[in-house]
Length: 240
Image 1: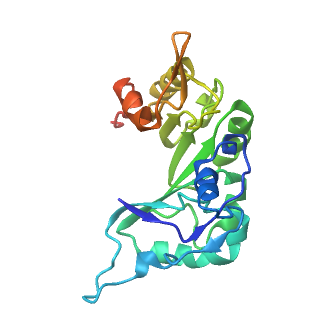
Image 2: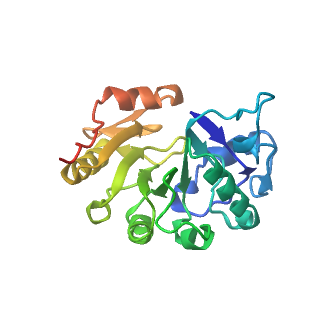
């Protein structure tokens, strides 16, 4: 698994951004998150060792996990990134975006129905943004689609958006003032995914977690552990 952040910095643009970990981390280091700038890793996928081999190993690469690949300020740099992605068919590049409504403005001229080695993950958090963003996402020419619902802020019905979705990831919010996550909301989404034969993953429970009507405060280090202990992940069945 690799990580590639060709630029850094982001702007809050969605209801799920309220307690963004990127902004909190930058604030502690006196960094202005709203300043979007290129990083020293901009050309990381095509950098080579002395023996001519790529420094970045083959496999999954998480792209722009400290920013948004579709953010407006990066429009002038993105075309070069697409070229590097195309040069590395041995890597699968996955990016999350809260700006899926900009997607068609941000793709390369040879995109057609998508690149085989690109996974696009649309991020939503409530009914309003799910209905707006997933209705757009549903019709976009992308070969590999995922949905991330982190933080999940209320019950959501996404059944009509699950066609051709490969994975749905759900999780809670991390912050002392985090909005609570109710386990019943998670189970509802799991049921929707199972009925549509879409893989489902409960990634993290968040700081304030409600189960059976009782609210718990979970330590950050235990978010993923507690989610995993629930044992509710689902792997889609192969079609015959």
